[in-house]
Length: 370
Image 1 (cartoon, one colour):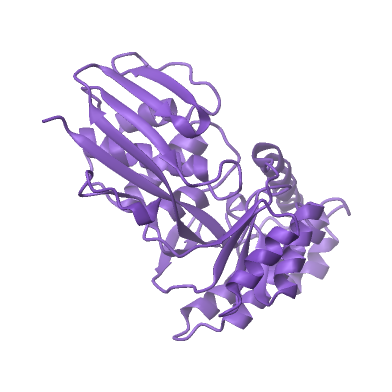
Image 2: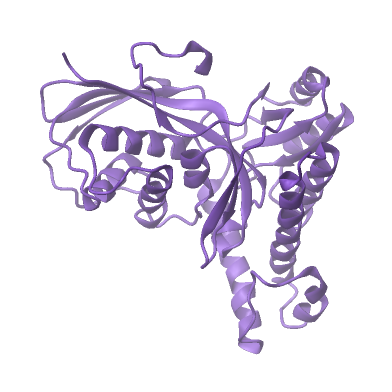
């Protein structure tokens, strides 16, 4: 009997900390119950025959070929190169179909979900010299997608998807994370239908944020962005040209908001109205200081709030993509309708998901997931 493996990986939405992880500041994100699904079946060859019907593409990867030059964005080959360094050596071929119900280029990490589902499959099929844990999978995904590809992103996407749940992630030198095992009711994703500008926006904002940090260090060699507080801003402003100050202000202010949100989430009973207010405050900085929104997304957010949402914000790199909304109980459908009436391509409820996994009964695909 041919071996069949089904690997699924959820999308993610960022609740707090957009444009923070690449400068070593924490984020709060959660995996959501929309997925990339990878179905693989042995084919008695030395080839991975890969179909991606959602984008109408096919490719063949010969497992014995040496991996040298990898084109930018070829995450499948990048993963293969990295997993081999961890002792995961493919020795037989599979027919593979990768599909899902995660929108592409919408700011909820469909590409990282593909990467994580691919890694989960490879480790399940061919093993590794280390114990396969969610953190191990997440780290491989980060190395393959960010370090190997030279991308400007951080660790949020890979760890949110690999670990699941609500995740508080410290991304700096003292890297650590905390899982918050609490449901967040009333989450809604609204798709703008405008493709996000991931690489360009991340590169631009990352460079300016780091330039501001290094400029301050020229005057204050002990400056640490992870320890800076809002009360320090007036002093720090004197060390920067006007063009760089907004990036410092956004970093320190959003760090403060993220810490406040963490305290709310760790209480025995979450105050969703307070959480929504912090979400709105975070969005205002993303909109007015970092300027990563577009008129359609602003209209979607305003309409969601007018319809009774506690809070709403743009997600991810920006200038397109999606929004996340925290809806008050009983008003979810009204808010969904308002987002679509404001020009949104789609809007729907989501739940917090438990993270990437191998389905133990691959012949019984849980229809509720897709």
